[in-house]
Length: 383
Image (spheres, rainbow, N blue to C red):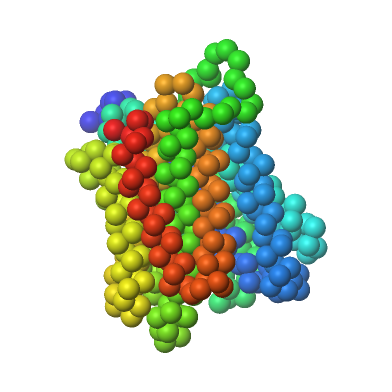
């Protein structure tokens, strides 16, 4: 098979877009792995760190209204390249922060860049999926998950070797710039839509329903990211060496599910897949609530990981099929609604746990997982 064959071209473009997903995941995991060191360097209290960390989602929210408009006007290829460079440079700036204001500004830019990258590379992924004429969206998000593991492992090594975050982030940035410089030649030239494109667009009913499905999915995902270890510690009362088991199992299942999910979607369809995903999430969380022992909860978190793995990728894929909005605008609208779930999920667990117990709060998140299934049956874009 020659390099110029259609199959080789599609495969090259697919790997080019995957590279952008991987670099974004690598940067985010690298930053996350060094939060304790950066906290110690700046002498931040727990409350102070919490306040500073708010700059990241604030930046993400600030970038949301502009992301779809920029992708539509300039094309996802140009935005993905520029935003990836901003994202990497913001990460490096975080590593050099010696003042709180410097860290806040860097995190804000990191959030803005991350959101622009997210919308532009998902727009690219929708284009590649259209080339293949089958579901492959989950595999792109799987690359992000693998990058997360890779970044965490490199971060753990850097911490063990007492490498300063600035040197660590420069090394990661070098790898990312090499990947970006190569991958940019293997991305789609997205069409620039004609006519006027409003900066702010109110989503129509189909996109609103997709956003609500994404909201429920990301609320469950955010809750698992932040509270799985606490659940093992406080509810399961696992030994100290097993406290991270739930988080690791959840992450492994989510990454595996994203690579295996596309094949299942192509067999049973996008709608049934999301409905099944919601049932798995609800079942896994309810199992963890009803039987708060190490083996049942581990199995429960495994089910949640598999369930949640395909929800957001499939919601994004469906948004790209909108007949009234360009892919970039549709993704931005759905992402805006979905992202609120990621922000609200973890605090919601905390509030309910404070008022009653952590087990009851996980039961509420299970209801949100079930809502994913119920909402999907009424979403027209999901077929």
